[in-house]
Length: 488
Image (tube, rainbow, N blue to C red; front, side):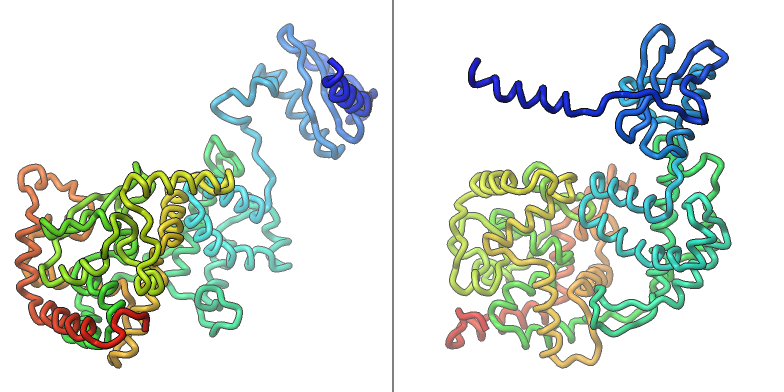
């Protein structure tokens, strides 16, 4: 008992330190009567107004607020709820499926803050950050002195606000990736539509019955005719990386670049799919890569599709070198890890899974809130054991493109477009193309016509023989060159 007594004494001291309840008034009265005969009495503890009474034979108590005006407004609503029979005690309200239908008087900044906070919990950190970057120009517009006076609350937004915002965005300047010293340029039409659609999504969320930050009869002014349609891609656009350009790229690559970029030059891989490949997902016996969901959903593709992607025999030496003597780990590695053959302590997929789960437990509790957060964490984990990020691979591709001295400019993702165009020109069936590019194959024809990825890719490989031959030739050159095993 002696060891418990100090804690008990501290708790009693805290209770004794609470200010007592004293009689208070709101709207000039201490007791407020309703037509049902229920009396609501006003008390005050410190600066907080409290309401006490008895409803349907049971006592209730509710905090009205610290500000007298706010407390009076809540008291009026409380009296109305009691008289209509809709009043729910605070201890029971939290158990109800829908919150109280009280429309908030939020500014647009407060509304968007609540929207982003929920999206962080439901859609993940990356999506929340994207939404935030799109909504910041909206706050720049609404918080101009003249606009703040006209549209102080989010519920004040009308069509004139939408028209003014769109005009403002057409004159708004930004920098690449938000860099403070970057070159200023006007927002693109595509980005303006992204901003307007994002704001439309936030306002629709706020109007939902279970959110009710906006009145039920509030209508969004962001109609399709005002938002507009995004510009469509030209179906006759030129291929940014035809075979001739990819041949030039191969001739400019060193050993590490050839190992890590050859897959993207030949196969319709997204960069994010390439850097997520594991050693165990390379099947040399069948000549294919296994791409899809890993670690019980901790990692997945953009379309959440699992598929097998055959690769040509010409890439066997390159992939053998990428794998090395490792049993498991990221297939594509940083230059330092690749040159020194480091970070090879992961012996199997089971060890990789165990290490990842152990590392997850070291992260802050609020770090992983969605499956997208877990995917991001897994890619970060791969980087800690020598893996390569999408940005690093893209930057390396840009270096090779510059060294090849090509007249046009292209990104690593453009290789996927070029390879897909090659699949089309090889007359690959549509369902096979959907499968090989990692898209959904839910078409009804898929029920009757199975895909043939091996036959389709063999047909495609026969059309790019010059590129495959150039990769083989370049591989022989860089493998035999002095210092070929060092990072350039």
